[in-house]
Length: 489
Image 1: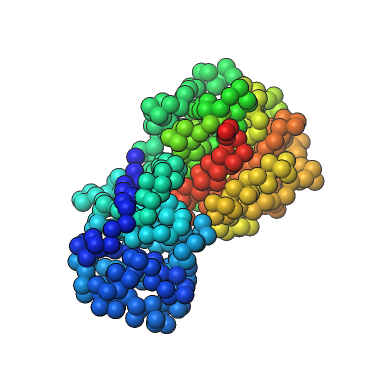
Image 2: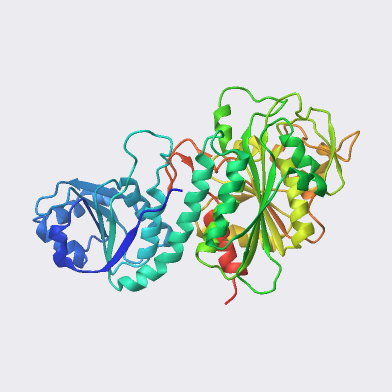
């Protein structure tokens, strides 16, 4: 698993600056006033820092953005990075500053001169999130990052504040790694094994195999994997860090590869369907983060792991399958498979754990990408207070999320003539009818949120905190939701 960069926090000692090698980072606020570290850097560089701060280039810089001065005179460093950042920055600006630093970080040592700046732990967190590279399948020299030292006032306090954030970063990286893996590596069995390994950090893990799933009546989930030689599974991860209260349940779609089944997808772009297990990846990342930071909350994560392949055994369009709940589903399109997986796992989660609330995550529809692009996940909910809590958490963590509608009128689109329900309702409001389908498998009075993350789980260009590829979207927001709403003490 890719590990976040190791960051050491040390007390401010300006006499060390002249001897620092690699990259040195200094912060300057919009007013251009130089702090203690910056003044020493300015003196060593014979006024170069001050001249840059007085320039139009600095005036035009946005908060959190930076500029490199290469091979600065008077320093042993290869580069001096100047970041525009207020002494008391917002959380978002602090993380943006960190991300700017992390993006530029390479094999050379990195020294961040934080001094008495506030939210230094958030700067470090932003740097850790951005300094990510998935290179497991590249030959030659592996991508390595040099040592990172943050020199700050009250370094022990900053290190203590940063520690839980670094655990969250590890959860994000776990999600990214899973989402980036090719399907011939992350098979259903390998996925299950990687989740089972979280027993080592205190998560209780059960892997339910096909015979048990058949006994439970998870026919809609099993119908998705009929065409594959890889066995379908449900993995249950339990973290009991609270008291006797009912757990929060997280449910994820884990389609390790989606060909569309008999309703075969077009060939162009099908290679991207390795990310169709992104929802399960987020659930796994959240469980890892809360276990590492020993959250005082009860959370259960459940993921349905399948592969959707065409074969002589594959489910056909027009087949009718009975769900674990007992409702019958006419399968109009085998490429609308994620909702079939979630239907059974959602019902099982409620039936077994009677949770206080349930959040499901899935790369479910292309329609949500058409509607919201790659900046926001679609949020659907039957409970305003629960939904508002999540949206607040997502906003605080700067993870884009936008609430979408639900309503009985949409049920007409998924009404079947020969079964209780059909799995697609046409092109119109495709993301909404998918959510309406899932809501049928939510019990009365159960607070529920559905997150359609098809547009945000993996992207073609870099984001604020991640390079091109898997983002780990949702780990930070759900971790925040758990911390703010469910943790005790």
